[in-house]
Every structure is written in structure tokens, then in C-alpha cells.
Image (cartoon, rainbow over all chains, first blue to last red; front, side, top):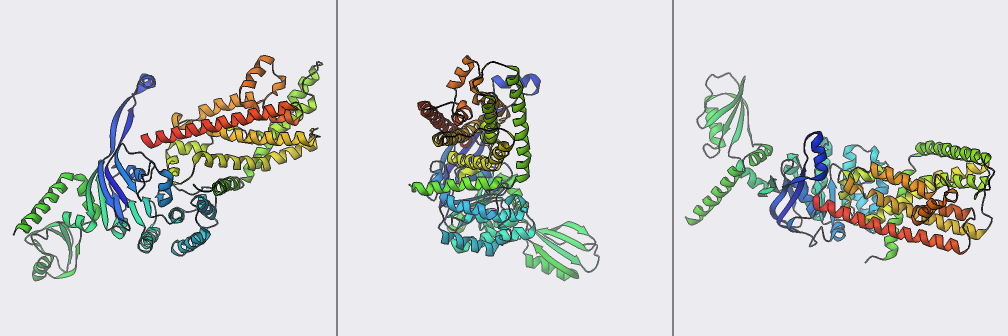
Length: 343
Length: 271
């Protein structure tokens, strides 16, 4: 469905000289440096997948998305979406994809939502039956009806986003690109949009590529994640695998019934203590969760106990902070795999 | 290839929606109408004073001058004096215009339709009221021959098409300059002068009128209104309309070329 091979994009960034005199010099000679926005990225996405394309600001997420949607021409490498080369076959590609950029509306600002939809119906030549069915379905799922006659400029952010996502799906695209679809939305609106994306994906087999900074989005929607950092791909695989790979450390929180002076447990160290609440950090390789709880129950009276998986936010932060550690871990695991295979 | 009728259908929808969008700003329109009359009065007073002070025969009678300026105000908003409209230049400036590339439409045709919708709106909501009110207060000549009226209608439509094509050519400069206020301001004043909006070309010194003849802009104002006033007749009408058509096609070509170059620049260099 989507094939990306050795994709790179470089930009020229002009260097502006400082000061009054410098601004005159700028008129005649401009220095520039080359910035790599996307560097040799390859991946392939199959029909019906929901993929989270993640990375910190400026990592190259949007640049990649723009190359997939035909807005930017790659410097090198190849892109294919539905078999089309987006920047060469822009109009053909456009008929088969839906695009939502969370920061910007694709609807006509001063027209009611319905009028925008009707324009889109004409643009994509959507047959009336299909159009009616889709509008009805999106109304059911996203409650578009309640603001169908309202001009887009008067919509709340949540309503606008619902309208925008529905608009991107009116022509039954095979692939949906979402760039930060839940940015700035409240919890309820986010949940609604996530549910909708999920439903569209399962019912219609729409392939979804999603960039976001909201890791709840990722957790709720994406089985697979692709991480990029500083223009390079640094992880591509299942979210669960990423978690396993990195989540060696876990956290156990305990509320003790009494105040104990010595609360140390072998193989677990206290990271937080306030009153009777204590948090232990431990590594499942050294002590299993069950053993740790057992050891605690043996010695102390407790009120409450809970184990936390590390936040995926934390995980991703570690990836960004220490790319090398991840690479090392990846090679280690493959090494272990190999040794296992030998025996 | 999709059938031509369907393609037309899409862009006709753009024209309609463009019209509809503007229908929402009725108060602004009323304020604009007042401005039209303000300028109309200024023009009429100035020319009445000039004509009173001169005994020499003039190429246009005072009545014809008044009619000319009424027509100028009727079509004022349809003309490319405004340069680039902010919504489009803003989108080009911040690169978000690229998002439109995700839709399967031809941009030049899209913006052209939008401009036509805008022209229809201002013709109906500004032009017509201006004309009707003017008839009540001033002596406005109305062509007596049907053929003259038809020729004027054709020439006026071409003037509107030219205006749309010129506007797109102007705002596509935003791809390079980022700030179009300079280009808009400059082109606006040049076009206003050479279209005959300020002084009918019939009153110009000969050498300047020659320059105007070689420029496209007379086709916006002076040509259709001279036809209306019966100052251009017979074969000359065909010549004048042919020239408008030629300039219209040239600006369509230029606009398409600039937009194409602008977008390729955008997609290669990024926003």
C-alpha cells in the first residue's frame, strides 16, 4: 500500500547576516547550509494497518507525510502510495488518499460544513448514493448533523476536527494521513475521534498513518509504530516490542498501613517516599513482580499496592535521548536470539 | 479523461460557492456601496468644474463623462486594482497553500472560478445598486441600439475574465516575494491609470494614449465603456474585443506558468 525506500529530503536554509550592514550584504550574497529533514528512511505499510509515525518536533515527521501526500518532492529515494508516485501523479494520488492536518482546516472557512462537503462531492465526483451513505454514517459516529449548517469559522476546534476528518473520508480513500488529529482537543473529543478512526479502520480497511504527540493516541490506535529522530528512522515495529525492549525497569507503588523505618527490599530500590507511600523501582530480570510483592507482604502490612508499566512517553524519551542505547539493545537481543537458536 | 461537462460542473460549483461565501458579508458591502458613491461624486464634481472652466469642444460630453464614471464605480470591485487578496497570499506565505495539492483540482481553474464568483457577487450586490441609484440622481446615458448593448456585454464579460486572469498572475508573485503588498500596490496604481479608471483615455494627450493602446489594461475599463458610449463602432468593435480576448489568453498563460513555477518551487524547497 505504501512503499518508502531510502527516502531523503534536504532543504537549503539561508543564513541571514546580522545587523544593519549585514542586511544589505544579504541582498547580494546569500549563504546557505543544507539541512537534512529526512535521511534515508525506508518502510512499508500494508493495507489496513494503523501506524503511528512518531518523533520529536523537527524530526521530519511532517516532511515525510508531505512527501507521501505529494506536497513535497523527495531529494532522493522513492515513494509509492497505492502504486502511485505522489509528486508525479499528484491528482491521481489525491483521489485515493485522505489528508487531515490538525493545525489547518481543509474546509472552506466561510461556508457551512454542508456546502464544503458538497464541493468535495463534486471535486472527487462522489456518486450521490455513496455521498448520502457516508454523510449518514459520519453523522452517526461523529454527530456532524448538529453543526452541518454552521459556517466553519464558527465551529469549535473539536467540531472542526470532526468535520475535517469526515471530509477527508467522504470519497472513501484507501489511505488516511492524519497529522496531529487530536491536537488541542479535550479528552472527550479525543476519545470520540480515536473511536472513529478505529471504526473506519476495522470496517473499511482504511490504512491509517498518524503523527501525534499524544501518546494516548498511539496506545489506543496503533499496533505498529515508526520512530524517527533527527531525520533518521530509529525504530519500526510493534508498540509491544518497543515496550518490551525498553521497559526493563518497572515501578511498584505501595501504601503501607504503618510507618516502617527500614523498608528496603533486596533487588529493588526506593525511588520515592512520602509518609506511608513508597515507590520501588525494579527490573523484572532481577526479581519477578510476584516475588517482590511476596517479599513485601511477608514483612509489612499494606493498604494498597500497584505495578506500573513505564509510560510510553518515558520510553520514547529514552529512545530520543539515547539512540545508541537502543541500537545496542537491538543488537543484544538479536545476539540472544542467535545463541538461543544454537542451543 | 473525465468528460468536459463534469469538469465544468466542478468549477461552476466553485463559482457558485465563491458567490455564496461573499453573501455572508452584507454589512461590509453596504459600507462599500457608500464608498462607491463618495468616489463617484468626487469624480463628477471635478469634471463638472473642468468642463465649466473650458469652452473648447471635448471628445466626451459631460453627460458621457458622468455615465463613464458611473460605470467605473459599477465595475470598480470587479477590477484587479486590489492586487492579491490576503487569504490567498497568506496561504502562499505560510506554505499552507501546499495543502491544497492534496486535492485533485487544477489550481488556476479553481482560483479563476473563485474570482468569477467574486465578480458575479460584486456585479449583483454592488454594481447593480450603484447603477440603479445613479440613474435616479444623474443623467446616465443608456445605449439605444441593441447591437451596441450586446457588444458592450461581450466586452464587459471579457474585461471581467481579464481581471480574474490578471489578479491570479499578480498574486502568484507571492511565491517569490512573500510580501505582495509592494507588487499589489504598484500593479494596482499602474492598472488603475492605464485602464482609464481615473481619466478616460479619450481625454489623454496623444503620446500617452498611444502607450495605453499597447498595454492590456484599457481592455478592463476604457474599451467596454467606450463601446457602451458608442465611441467605438463598426469594425473597431471587433478589433477591440479581439484585443481583449488576446490579452485574456496571454494572462491565462502567464498565470498558469507562474503558478506552476511557484508550486514546483514550493514542492522542491518546502514552505
